[in-house]
Image (cartoon, one colour):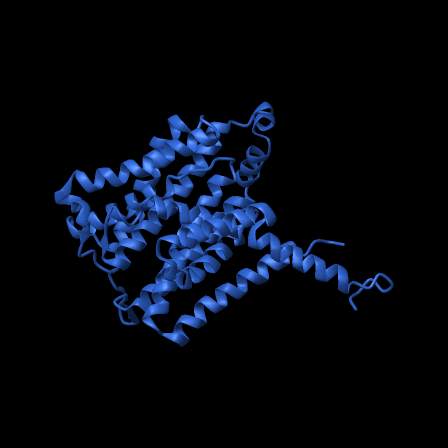
Amino acid sequence: MRSKGPIVRIIIFASILILSIIIPAIIQDPYWTDIFIFILIFIILSTSLRLVINTGQATFAHPALAAIGGYCSGALTVILGFSFWEALPIAGLAAALISLIIGYPTLRIKGVYFFLITFTFTSLVGVLVGNFWIPIFGGWKGLINIPRPNPIIIPGLLMIKFTTDLSYYYLVLFLTVMTIWVLYRVEKSRFGWVFRAIENADLLAESVGINLMKYKLLAFVIAGIFAGIAGCLFAHYQKIITPYDFDLNFGILLFIYTVVGGTSTIVGPILGVIFLRILAHPLRQFGIYETMILGFILILFLRFIPGGLIGLLERIVGFLETKLHDPKTGGFI
């Protein structure tokens, strides 16, 4: 009997997309709009992080790359007068360039050593923007007065402004969907097959002529582009960016969201972000223990549900499919 896994993922993604379009417009509550915007930004980060994980590398560089994208976009718009639409792709390219510079000498290192290097890199970026180039980046107080996106004007037809949080939400939703689509196309391309081959058996892949360094670096740079875009969206939503925004705690949460959701499919991190970001709000009453509780949830998933939320849902569907299947007729009871 054919697995219903792909169908389950399509249904889940389509349901999430429809609800993402409808619910914010119905609620129109600033509190929930804020939550939804951050969910989308974390989805961009977690789905792009998954791309690197699927090459067998655990990276902690995403918070730093997001910070680079945010600071780049903020400085371009505040100091040099660029528009948001000009700064957005430059932010992604700036993060990609740093990914290339960091990744080229370090991606040959495997396992925990690569993780520690990217961990140090994220810590270093926070220190640099906090203590150096203060006239540009604002030091530890941050870069302020970052503008919202310029209006989209179609002469004689319409003008779309992004002055309200709800309008900004739909902009972020559009860019999130585009991110998911691009990453999905990459995954289904020849590059995606090579990435999975490297993850499952890198030495075997290398023995048949696959350049491990080339493909690992490609995944790292592509993920860096979207991390930079997410940082840009964060900065222009908050209208301020500080070194504290993309600290080590941010990176830990991002890892938890990605792993709890499941990395076997792109829908996994989406579920992980939605589930844990919504759960995080009642957990805030525990203060400093919030991250500890989320870490405990991560341990439970790693021990009992290693496939994450998406794996759990597919197992449930498979179980129900088996129970309801009628072997006599070949159909369902």
